[in-house]
Image 1 (cartoon, rainbow, N blue to C red):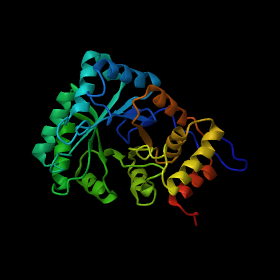
Image 2 (image 1 turned 90 degrees about the vertical axis):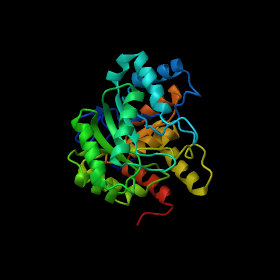
Image 3 (image 1 turned 180 degrees about the vertical axis):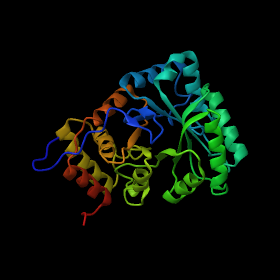
Image 4 (image 1 turned 60 degrees about the horizontal axis):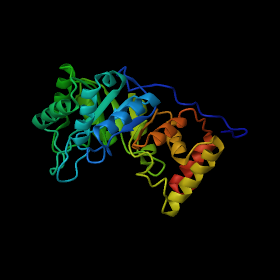
Length: 309
C-alpha cells in the first residue's frame, strides 16, 4: 500500500520470539477452539494440521476447555490433536504447542495447586506429549493466591513438563502479581484484541507487554466474525476503514485486520480460528503488508468512533 508523504511501518518478521523464552514461532498462530471430533474425522484433522504447517504457521493454540459443550467434551480438542500426533509423530517437531488450563466447569475457575497440577497432567496425556511448549493460565482464579499458582507452574517448568508460561485474559495488575511470585519469566499474554476490541491499546495491557518483553497473542482477531458481517454502525465504519487499505494492498478485509494488529510494535500474533485451508493461506498475506501511520490510525479512529485528539 502507498500513501504519499507518509512513512510506512515495518513489516512483521518471518519469525517471532515468544517473549524471552527463546522459542521462535510464525507471526500468526492457528487456534483450535472450533476443532471437535463431532465435526471432523481424524483424517480430516490430520490433513488440516499438515496444511497449516505446510502454509508456514508453526504456533498451534488449544486449551482443555475447547470442545466442551456445557455437558460433555471437556478436553476434546486436545485429545483430537493428540490422536493426530500419535498417528504422525513427525508433526510434533514442526509445531510449537500451546495449551491452557484453569477453567473448571461449573466452578468456573480453579487454579488451586492440586487441581492445576492434575489439569496439566491431563493435558499432557490427551496431547500424548511429554512437554508442552507454552502453557497458559486461561482465566484468573480470584480464590487462589498467585503465589500458589506460581509454585505449581515453577515446579512444572523445573520438571520439564512446560517450556514457557503465559496468561490469558489477565488484567495488568493480575499479571504483575503472578509474575512477582514466579521464578520463571512469563513469555506471553493472550487478551482479546481486534479492531472491534481495542481496550488493550489504552488500558495498559500492551504497554505492560512491551515493558516486560511479553509477546501478545490476540484471540478473536476478527471480533468473533463480526468484522466479516458487520451489523452496527460502528462495525460498518471499521470494516469500511479496513476495506480502503485492503483494496489498495490487494488483500481481503480479514487479512487487513490481521495485518493491522501485526503492525503494532508490541509484536502481536493473531490467532486464526478458521478450519478452511484457503482462509488460513489467505491470512498469511498479512505479514508482508506495509501499513502507513495514517492508514493505521484511520482504522483506530473508526474503532474509537471519534476523531483522535
